[in-house]
Image (cartoon, rainbow, N blue to C red; front, side):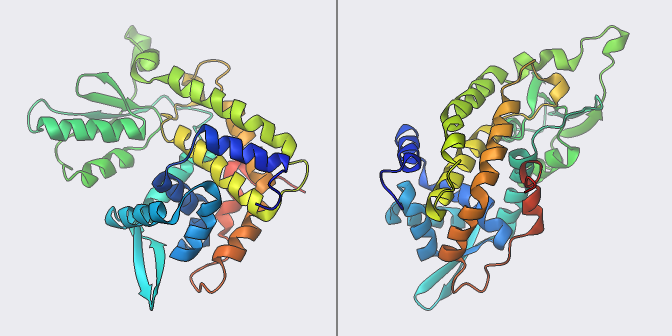
Length: 310
């Protein structure tokens, strides 16, 4: 990095020591946040160079990239002795799906409607039910009764996509519902503490704020491009790991003083303070000799509520 003794470098080194990132997960974070809005293509050598300052060695990165190709996140092209890696169609869909959680967050309002997924008692093997449950929980659904999952925000399309992905589109019921608690029944929202581990997610948001709040003052001085890029990747990587496990319940269903709100505001402020310098480093490292490297997509300017004025 530009100045090994600078406060920002010491902060980044401390972050890496506290929570060393895994190569494959960090690679996905970089692909989704930094490369997808530029077309999603990068030479393997450039990817290695970008992640080396974050403690990811070449062997680990090559292994991670091969796995992402095998999982259809990436596809590769050989150009002589060089390899170009691109986000596949599935990788683009995965990235777009995750972007809503990462950059937009849960809705501030809620119309009271639920998406329900019901698993019939017959027609599903134990392995299928377990796999479907894992996918639904990852999407943010909570189990409100045996074989019955609910989410107050996710559209039915997401549930159908999961069933299609698992090859069981006709093995579960996907319903849109509104509870009738006003007639004396139990409101589904009252089950939130039982169906979703909100306290665990809340503690992750508190920890994120503790770890990254000191960075805001360090950015009063403009960072060097390489520092800005490293900080942006670590920031988004930490943020992504939390929000993709957050069920993203609408604000009216969350506890008062939900720590996710100030954590998201902090992440957005830091992100935009780092953005321009980090983009300069990305351009210098990945945008050279790469015809697939596209100008920044306009929708990137809408992240975290939009680029601040000035």
